[in-house]
Image (cartoon, rainbow, N blue to C red; front, side, top):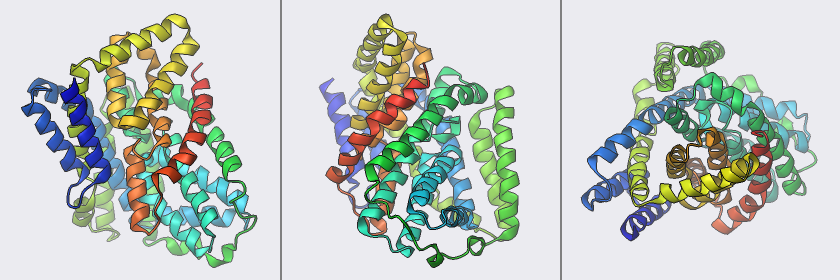
Length: 417
């Protein structure tokens, strides 16, 4: 047990630290290799991990490729500018509208897509508007928070959603129905809590005349018009896939490649370049980290978690939902939500508590916001900001995350009762 825990902690520290030249996927795979050599996991465990995560990982790659093509044609910049113009110069409206935009992007393009694509766009617009440092921090932190707190409504909205849906055989429509209310509660609670927390930092007015016209952001009009139709058809495709029990990655990755081909045809993107810069490291990150975490399962972690879940169920449904949600949240904030969702899924299965899968998802999606290491999206978000010259320290981040996350999670879990 000590060896398994030590290996996990070393791998996690290297993922967070990211020494020069050592990417997160490489670190995770090295950790998986060490786990195999030390006998913490077997080749059978590796095959089991790949079976659990391959669909989610390929779907994620597809969603990111789709997001990158849309970004190339100016889709997200157009949306950000449109949002700013609709505010009419009101700082409060702009704050709320930016959160709504973040929620929509997270729902359709995953929380990681919001971190990678939308964050730099919003940051550049805030700088053009000449917001002071307090206001800039408020908009950035709020945008980062909503990316995770609103990544619950669809299976494709978060890697954790796909992993759990695959593990328990939850269909696209079944998932969407179950999570509609909790996600709505999460979004409303997020907006209210974030506004109350940052109300003194939000400017009363902003000079939107400094921003260019939204239509000027569109780099390829044909692809822009096609994107609306394509996104609608893709969403319908997910529901069709549900009816015929087709894996979500078939439509997510397949659809992304079709859209990439269309972009190449209309000379809107360079397909080889897009594929080259796609986050393939996430594939190795998912598989490698899950293999390392599977070692924790082998030394009894899931057994102990299953005992806690059984005890919670013996109390009442309310205790079970809130207990599972906050247990997942706590583990996610400490050991990252990617490994947490898998060990908790296995524990729920062992406890015969599959109905608590949604509470697990909410905990794994919102809980990570308490610490910078909680989710891959947050790590990507911090990396993007650092590249843009914005440094957010751990203490500065946790001062906000520890205050905002618990009340939002409490309200979101209410939607499951």
